[in-house]
Image (cartoon, rainbow, N blue to C red):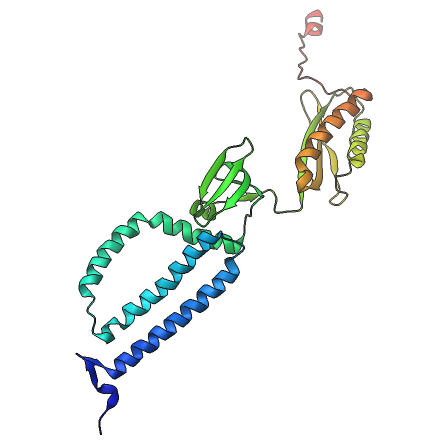
Amino acid sequence: MIDLLNINIYGDVTLYNFLFAVLVTFIAVLLARIITRNLRRVLTDKLKKDQLELLLKSIYFGILLIAFLSISPLLGINLSGLLVAGGILGIIIGFASQSVVSNLVSGIFLLAEKPVKIGDQIEVEGVRGIVEDVNILSTIIRTYDGLYVRVPNDKLFASNIVNFSANVARRFEYVVGISYRSDINKAIELIKKVIEDHPFVLKNPEPLIFVDELGESSVNVSIRAWTPTSEWFNVRIELLQKIKESFDENGIEIPFPQRVIWFGEDEKES
């Protein structure tokens, strides 16, 4: 009885090897389509169209290339010379594109983790500003003085990111010096009233106003209050001005730095 599967089709390639190679190719194409289809659905709103297409094509043909390399020995294709040349070329390209690959992988992780998004106010690697764009290789930040800074995604992913916009509420703090001659209780009541009258100061968490330090020239009052993150800057500058105006209207003095010099005249007279 003739074993059909072991019949040589051409050269040393048997029918079994050929059918197995066809099966592997079919599975690879099917797997590549499933992976790219799911990635397209997940990343459509997170990547630009051209970036998404480039990523999907790279993954699709990468899977097919791996499948081809795995079945080539079954088809009698000798890739030893090609693999040696490809290996040398791959090493060269690998060193040249190491940062690109690192940024690409980091960008994918950033898109999945979402530590930042467009419009967030962040600080990273000493750069503080608003996120303008999140690309697959880098993130663009517009600083508060209008400069655009490109931060590679591998640095962004490996750094401590301070996201000022992630929480719906944000706290600000002042330290206001009150003259020792002024009524500290009255000053605290005036501060409370200014804070309570502002519509964007949150009741919960409750604002804190307390004597923090007896300084050389003043009694230092610490003021801590919470406000919606979107209104943080405006509320912070408005309240400080209103506190100063309230002090002026009610005779509460904010002193200049001062020193008391004692000459010891009483000891000389004695």
